[in-house]
Length: 172
Image (cartoon, rainbow, N blue to C red; front, side):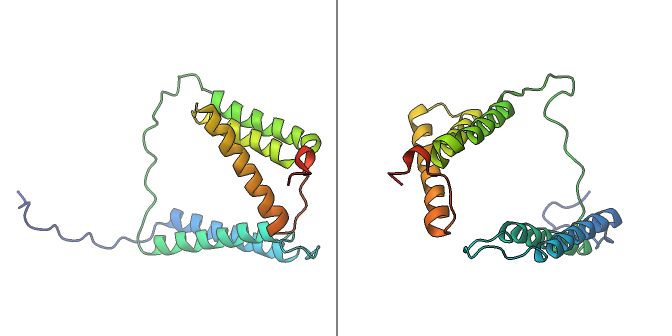
């Protein structure tokens, strides 16, 4: 029997897992390819945020993730097995929440050109909150509108991008 008051000896270092290392190198390679493709995009406009910003962010993030995974793998960390699923595989899928989010997104995309960015985006945010179980209607409407207005102001005033003002054009 072991004495519970004595600390257990540390685990011996494990050799890096080859599948985990291959996955880390694959993610790193994907990030490098994304970065190569991103740097080939012409700068385009004179705006603060050009067409390279989002792909550059994604490619650098992918490169950082791949490097981090490689370092963890080389230090002996291993990916654990997936946990047991929470539900039975025979249970019917509940598509209410994803359907509500997708429906809100599609409806918002349809409404942005005629009504403007703020009403369309607020509708999308409202549908996401509803799908996630929130039922305080006034709070959901207020937060959705505030979020949409903040995003609109950041993109139009802060970054110099053009978004459709729509019916709120005189107010914003």
